[in-house]
Structures are given as C-alpha cells and as structure tokens.
Image 1 (cartoon, chains in turn orange, green):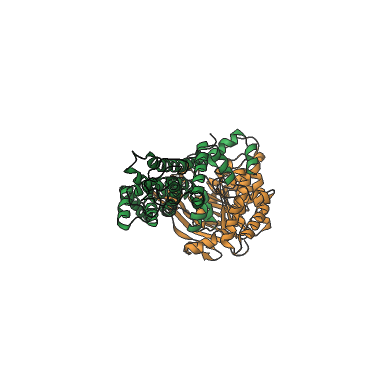
Image 2: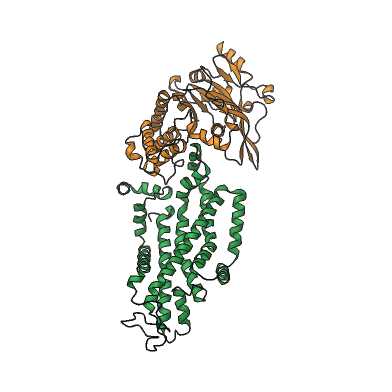
Length: 331
Length: 304
C-alpha cells in the first residue's frame, strides 16, 4: 500500500454499559484506510460494524456506550483525544457519514437543498445563497436529475434512492477526506441499489475521498471495494483484497460466509449454513469468539484469542489454524 | 408545486404521508386549517376584535372615560340609537368602553401568552434536549409551580405589586409557562433521539444548531397550539382580576365593567351582558383557533 493511511484505527474498543452487563460491541478493531481506497466492512447484524463507524465519528450514544480504549488516527491526529469543538470541525469536513435509512436521517420539515446547505454553512464562511448554490452542485454531483428543482422538495416528496443520494451529497458537500457509508443500499430495491453502488464507484474515481462501506451484503462490498474486512462478534477476523477474500478465504468464518452465498459460477448446489448463532456479546465465548461454531476448532481456541496476524500479500487473519488451512488447500 | 403533487398523489401515498410526513408550508397549513369551519370562524372573530382594538380611537362613538355624574338623564340609559349598548352608572357609553376594552384584553392575552411561550419553550427545550440533571432541576421547578393554584398566585402577586397593565401581563405570563415547558420538553425528548439529529451531528452540527435549526421546527407545533389556548385563558384571568378590582383602574377593561355592573345589573342588564359576552366570544375564538391549528398541524390527525 502506497503512502501513509489517511485513517488508521488501532485496537478500538467500544463497550455498552447496560443493566444486563457490559456489551463489548467493538472489542479491539484495527485497520488502515488509504487515500482513494474503498474498504468494505462486512459482518452479521450485531457484529459491531456500525458501532465501529459511529466510534470513528465519536457519535456513540453516551450513555450507555463508551469508547473504552484505542486510537483513531486521522491524518496523524488521534480523534479520540480531540475536544468536542475540535471534533465537530472534523465531522462533515474531514470525515463524514451517510446512513442506512434515508427517510429517517433527513429532517422532515426542511427542504433537502437547505439541509445540504446547512452542512456547507457549518464548515465554510459563505452566505446562505452561495451555500444553496453549492448544495445544488453537490446534488448534481450525485447525479440527481434536475437538482435546481429537487433542492426545493421536502424529503417525503422524494423516492428512496433519491433520498439516499441526498444523504450522500450531504456527506460529500464539504469534500471530506473519508466517507463512511453505513449500509448505503440496505433500504433500497435491487435496481436502485445498483445505481447507488455505481454512484459510489464514480465518486471514488472522481475525488480522492477514502471510503468505508459497511454492509451485511457481500455482493455490495464486492462491487465497490478493493479491500474487505470481515467482522465477527466485535472483532475483525480477516482483512484481504476483495478478490483474494472471495477466492481464497482464510478464516473459517469467512469460508462459511462464502459457502453460504448463492453464486452463478458454481453451478447447482445446496448452500451451506454456519451452524449456531451469533454469540451474546454480554457474555461472549472465551478465546476465539468463533470457536463454538468453528469446524477447525482445537482446545487452544477456547482459551486464547489469536492476534490479527499478517499473512503475505497484505492480508490479515485472526485464526490459529490458518496456516494449516492454507496448507490443506494448496495440497 | 406542493398542490400539484398533492393532486397527483394516490390514496396509498396519502396514507403513507399522513403518518410520516409533516409538510409545513403555509399553503398546506392553510388548506388544512380552512377545513375546520369553527376555526375559521374563530379566526375571523379574532380579526374583528383585533381591528376593533386597533381602530378604537376612530370607531368608538364616545369618549369611554367621559362621565356625566351630574346629569341624571344620562346615567343607566338603556341601549338606543345614540348609545348602542346603553350607559353605565357614571353615564359612560358602554359601546365605546367595549371597543376600548378590546385593546386591554387582546394586549394582555397576546403579551402574556408570548411571555409564557418564550419562557416555556426555552426551558422546555433545554430540559428535554440535555436531559439528566438539567432536566431534573427544571422539571422539579415546574412541578413546584404546578402545585400552586395559579390564579391565587397571580392574585397575591398583583395584590402586592399593584395591578398596572404591565404587571398583570408579566405576572400572568410568568405563571402559566409550565404547561408549555412540559409540552416542549416531551417533544424534544422524542426528537433528540431521531436519526436526523444523528445525521446533523455527523456533519459537524453543535448543540445549539441542533436545538434551534433541526429540532425546533419539528417540535414547536404543540407549543404554538398551546400558546393560542393560553391567549384565551390569559384574557379570562385578566378579566377576573379586574372584576375583583385588582386590575388597572386607568384602563378600560371588560372585567372592570363587569365589576361596575355587579351593583346594578338588575337595573341595567346591558352593563353586564355586553362585557360578559365579549369575554366569552374572545376566549371561545382563541380556543377555536387553537383547536383548528391542532388539527392542521398534528400529523396524526391528517386527512380524515
């Protein structure tokens, strides 16, 4: 990977302190994001993908959530050590975020153009009219037809795909260095999904924004991202280039995931499922959190959490048995 | 453009709108408000009272203060062509006094409701938005207010500090805000958890921005409805104060006229009837307006 990462997350831990106990939603997540790179984060519901993103933005609701330890280095500065005023300046202009449900994340009583203009006004010293003009330009950038007119619409007058575009233009309005897209396509139908993914890809080619795309849909991530991080129960279990991950998964969980998606190139076969269920994070399994469901598990897996180890080709995997798995596959 | 969209919308979309959507453009509001005939009636009555108050010097046929104590042929005159509503025990023209009285009533009502809205909305917003200890402190203060019978509190304060118009407005305004504060708090409590607040934070918005620009436009409507109801109740309170002789004796007030009528209303029914009628009508019209605004602004009652 060339150059320094624009965003570097190190051993991030975010816990939720609830009445039922401490939920370790994010438990030691580390990854780097480079300029112009698109990194996908995939995982089941409750694996900590979204909490990771909210932690980077420092938007975890507190209480009950708290970022317990770790570092989030953005252009060399640790975001977790900034004052809240400094952090406000980073949000929107340095790192910004678009969200899953484009209806509820837009203010129902504000014209969409005004909402985007607000984002611009917060970070730029321009007057309202100019900001509105810039908002229209941002809307044009996300390929909204007739943005001059649409800017005067209220959110309920727009379709789901259109609203998602508005959210993305809001996030991009101040040209951030990093865009975090949290489940950008989940609430949309397949055709609109495809359009939004194309849009994200175009954005990445046109401006040098780094992207984190969170999804539970491997297909979505495969379409846009160069690298993918797989999360399980608050940990990253594997990071690899997208193609590598799909063709040659190293972690037993990733392997299970790959077996469970329907693929046109594999012919007719029964899809496999991973036995068991996602662990309860108030009381996660000891050692490697995947061991109760893992076909390769040995006794040590129950006691030790393996480190995220670097494998050749810039891959990382968190498994004791990966070397053997690799050997088995080669032979 | 909004109206075009509305016409095109199918029934299904309408149903979807009615729950989620709150389009708050003025035209939209008016369209919905107009459906409530009683509310329109209330509004036109208030407009009538308002013009009466503003134009009082022009339209009142007599000087409302002019007395004819010596001239016994001019006191207690029943309504006729010269004195449309008769004269009182000092020979003053009741009709002119009614017209001038609208000034005091409307002014007290509007100013007191405005004070109450300003205080109540601000404290309620802060309370609901920040929650926790701030919320606790403000809400216990509100509870304290609510345990005291408001009218007796107002009565006591006016008795101590005097009943000048300014005092009356201030005292009424500063004692009726707790209900507004509660409404506003409840709204802020629910809106601060909304996703669009999270979205605003993610673009770098601070607390003040979120409170006033993001949440307030969503949360203000119940408080506005409440304020219009409070105008009516403030007018009623002022009349009651004046009736008890605690108002400003230098102003013409409907309550004061009722007080005058008390000793002689068996002889001169017009002295009691007209001010009483006015008070009733004004209060009813503001309540009708409040109702109409509630129907027009409440997204859950839409499009019945």
